[in-house]
Image: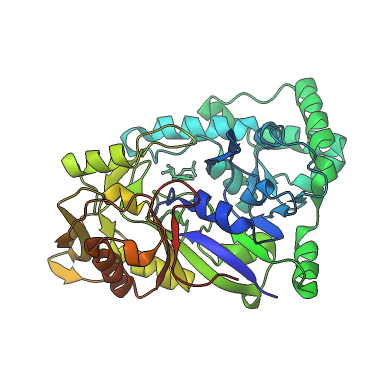
Length: 420
Ligand code: IMP
C-alpha cells in the first residue's frame, strides 16, 4: 500500500487542519514529517477546543496511530504540554528516535538573531525552529533517542555550550544551569521515552501489511520550503511533498495520492516577498472576513488575491494529483474577484516563478463575483460566478479541484469525486 499526502501549496495557513481532520477519520496512521511547534491549528471537537502544534490530527480519531517523524524538530516541553490535552496516548503516539530536540536555548537564539537582523528580520515564530535545524545540519544536534541516557546527553549539551561559548556570548544567550538541565532532561525522559521508537521500520511494516491507510500531513506551505520557497524568508525544513520521504524514511514509490491545499485567496505571515499582497481595502476585507490571524502567534496575516503562477509551480513541485480549495466563502460579496495569471519581471511578462521574487509585479484577470457560497455542500448549487472562478483556477494551475470548503464547519464541504 502507498501513503497519501497532504501539502500546503501557498505560504501555510491554507486550512489544512479542516481537511486533515476530515480525512484523518479514514486513515489508521497519520504522520508529521517536518517543521515543529511553529505549525498549529485549533480543532473544535464536541464543543472542546483542541490546539495541535506537533501531534498529528489523527489524534482525534481514537483508532489512529500518530507518528512524529525524524524530519520534525521537537520541543519536549511543548510536546508534553500538548499531550496533556489527551487521555491515554499509549499505542496512539510514536515519536522517531532520530527526531532532533528543540531546547529553550534554541528559542533564545532564534529571538536574539531576529533582533540582530533588525528591519531584515524574517518574522519567525520564535519557536527555535531555525537554530534547531541549524544544529542538526552542522552535526551538533541532540536526538530524541538520546533521552535514554540522561547522563551522557547532559554532558553532550554542556560540551556543546563550551565549544560554542563565544557564539552564545555574542548573542547574549546564557548556558543552562547544570543541575536544572539534568532535572529537566529527567522529566522529558519520563514523559516521552515510552513513545520513542524507530518509526521508519514501523511505517514500512504498516505499508507492507496494507491493513491501515497512512496519511502524511505536511506543515507550513510550499513557498516556505527551505530550498524551493522565497529564500531567505522561509522556514528551515523541506515543506514540499519530497520532504515526507526524508522526514519519515519513505521511498518515492511509497507515496500515493498527493492532495494540495490552497486557500481561495493568498495570505502570508512574517516578512518576505508576496506579489499579490493587497495593501488596500480588499486586503483588509479578506483579513476581516477570513479571520486571518495566526493560531500560533496571533499575528495579523498579510492578505491578497490568488496567485495562479505560484500555485502552478507548487502543484508541479509537489506532484499534486488534486487540490482542496479552502475558504471560498471568504470571497462572498466581492463584486469582482482577481486572479494573478502572470508576472512582470525585469521588464518582461513571465508565467513562471523566478527564484528571486523581489520586484515581481502581478498581472491580473478579473472575474465576476458572487453573493454567497456559505454552507453549500453540492457543486451544482454553487453560484455561477463561483463555479467559473473554480474552473478558471483549475485551468490555470493544471490540477483538478476536487474538494471545496464553504465554511469552517466540517459538513460544509463539497466533494467532487468519491473518496475511498
Ligand atoms: P520559523 O518557521 O519560525 O523559523 O519562521 C520562518 C517563517 O515561516 C516565518 O515567516 C513564519 O511566519 C513562517 N511560518 C512558520 N510556521 C508557519 C505556519 O505554520 N504557518 C504560516 N507561516 C509559518
